[in-house]
Image (cartoon, rainbow, N blue to C red; front, side, top):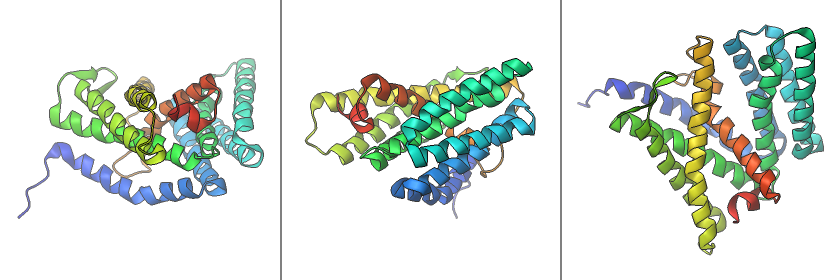
Length: 279
């Protein structure tokens, strides 16, 4: 007779089941790219906009405008190129902020939502357009998933001092260190698959340094969303994914990593894959 699952691992098992069910619906669009990947991002943008509005207690119209603008920007990126869509995203942020200030409304529902939702989504679209786009997006996903998995297991098994007890009582320093190790492992293995074993030592060392930093970014982005939910007294962004909560609850770390990597690419001024892998 099998032993019962310890209570602290019951939720983890449910999360694993849900993740395995959802995984094929993510992998296939990443592999094929083009309209299928854009459709996945657009669907995510619509759902994330609805959850963002619910967290902030914003009118439904604000969430609808945010979702519509996100889908429009992604559609524009599919037709005209994601780099142009990134520029359009910032134009829309400026216009949304101007309208909100003129009407005496909050900036966060639409203008802030565009930065938090549309920007990382069109960044993913931009990364996928690279010559090695499928592998770049895979690298980002594997790194962030590794952070989540290793942080969760390490935090539950080791425990210890809390990372940010006021904002997120379940997160621990041991979980952060486990996530950093997981990001280094996932990023390193992905690098070996993409670049092969004929890499320059400096490139590999730079990636091993960057991967744990991305883990910190992922955890920071997770805490950022937790702080917003705590401010508005919201437990989960939604209940669309059994065992996971809302979509924003699952991609908050990915949002932070995509925005940081976009900054790295812009600062280095090369193609996406070369900016991330060739140092």
